[in-house]
Image (cartoon, rainbow, N blue to C red):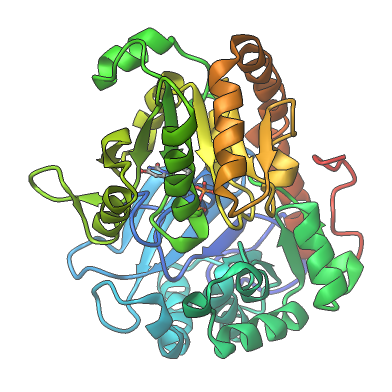
Length: 440
Ligand code: UDP
């Protein structure tokens, strides 16, 4: 009898002396190394990177498997101590639309399994992100026989509920998500509404779904001097500044923001400037691609002069933007969590957000910011004007925002996740969730 309780044969080159030693994250369609704020790279990439690095600090090594999109990038990249990003060749080694990835998932799973054989590593738990990765995790289980935790980030079901007629999700995604609900060993919901949706509308067993919100990096996002931030960003010292940060995607409600600014033009003096972070600029610094369409819409509505498009920014520059802003607008039609809102709050900047999805839990209405019904420009305009014109309200919300954001500090969030992995790696399928609910 060995002292650690492990009785089995060596697996892939080493004997486990603890049930939970290494995790595989599957993140097929986008890499934690991708430039943020463009195309599909946003909150999920940040979440995967930060969660992995926090888990590694708690002693769990993580390999993040992603699809290779470039012939020349290395197979392995260390992104923080204990965390490697692994490029897996499956399909063409160039960026392809995520709607084309599904047929390459069997290759992805086989190549990931070969990697683990070649390198002699064994994974005790798989955490898959988004439905495509969930399917890859299911296929990988055939090789690894490892329990897997699925996180949808958003489900097609919830996305379709707020989508315009042209943005509906394909039937395949709906179908696979339904299968993954049955096939996975545990599902992580980012907020209580998502958990309720999985249980009540999608008939998932209650003890399988745990609510673990994403965390926020409080070492990066904290209050900083506003005048200094404006000076460093070349923004006017005394302008009223509304900040938007996000991918250019219909779900972000950018149309609502444009119309809200048109309302403000009719009713408010002085007029705020909207600093818009996200999307692409061309070599002349002009909006291009999807961002050009937004700039055109702003011109058509007569508010182009109120928008300053600065393109996507590296995340370590965002604290300056949050500090420079009077208020951050998050007009999304839906957010699973809304990292931008929580980063703003952690920076002590009030938020005006849609009462949609996770935002209703992360932004406490009247305490950390104001919530408004989604897709209602006049309501958004009124709330922005209220915050911009009332110094006392802004100061109170700033205080409340800091307190609300502190609930999402990474150590607590990562510990909850670790608890779930530990239970699964030990072979449990019940009582997976941590009792200390962050939303309680
Ligand atoms: N982000 C960034 N640079 C940008 C735009 C966004 O670093 O130009 C980051 C931002 O800090 C946040 C994430 O991307 O962590 C966006 O997350 P959110 O949950 O708000 O939106 P999602 O992309 O998940 O829809």
